[in-house]
Length: 474
Image (cartoon, rainbow, N blue to C red; front, side, top):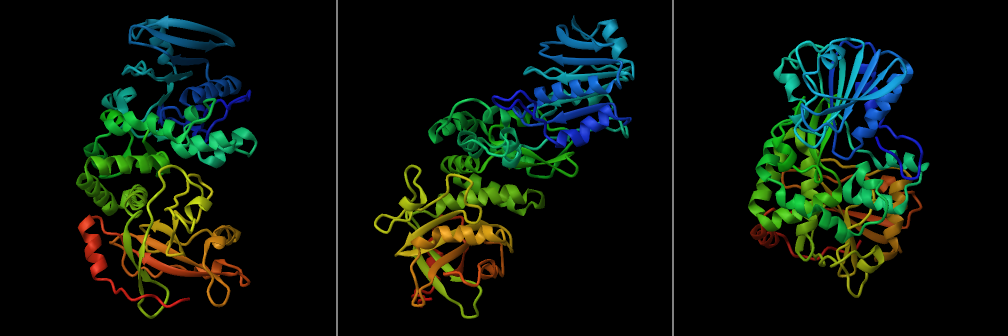
């Protein structure tokens, strides 16, 4: 939902066509339809779409669009009746407004302001209502207080997902401009940020997140992880769980949500900030999320970000997988770069650095490094099985790393593929990655696993228990 830059057209997310629009413009008996989504995702533009569609379909005698009201005593509405459009300055107690809302032939569209203001609600409301609100209950909790929620078929909430990069590409005829792709990497699929003209640097993105990183309250985040939320989210979460960092990802027919980050970049910024502020509290939060079956994706984001934070500059112990004989290797992972460096600069034999992609063009691995001249690529996962993308994608991607790998006596480039897995994952046996490479490939993949401890002192204990013998050449 939003207005694409330099385009005279309205982009509407398909999710919001399938659910509340069909229900409210169709013949459903449901009257109240709160529709919640991330601030900046385009709720105002979406309501304009609903209004235009309702005018064309002529299923309602009266259309009301309320936007910009400041209090129950100063409401501003756009009214469409019999092809005529006019505005109305009114209040909650206006008998003419109440009469319109008591008729089933009225469609009432409500765009909440920043203040805590709900739509006009009273016992006699028979109109169909769509409220496009941010993801908390302050703009529609009155529905449930007045018995709307328990009544079968009367009211429900739909949560809209963030835009995917493929959906954003539809704004631009399939090709996302580099400045927009960069904003997507930083802030996720929020049109308000993506469609704003101009470019943005990494430093500017971090500066934009600074206030939210300071205001986030871990107890509120932890409380949210207890179970999926449905129907309404307490308004306290709006400030304690800032929307610039977190997204409420819909599940189960878009009527429940799971907590997630808006982007991988935000995940990293959040993790580094929390670890520096209170390491023990952050690790406790991760441990709780890891044990919650509803929050696997959220825990996975935390684990990956924690791994990126803790691995660079550390000596680690690897264990070989997908072979019968037990085999170990101890390697020193180089420190990360101070700023962004591309692949060629990080995988430099003279001064290697821990490489973490600063874009979304590496779909198979999460990071890479050189250690004593050997190439290691890392994939973080909480799952017992994690098969990468199949087909040409994996083989084409692996060829990108081939120039940086040492060759064995048979002339094959040896790439050490390291699975970074949580300590709770047992019997991880790797994946048949060799099946994803063509038979003529000049690459040899050697798989290892690394289970990083969460505490610093446990790293040393792990190294002490690891055999130090050198691995034979491949």
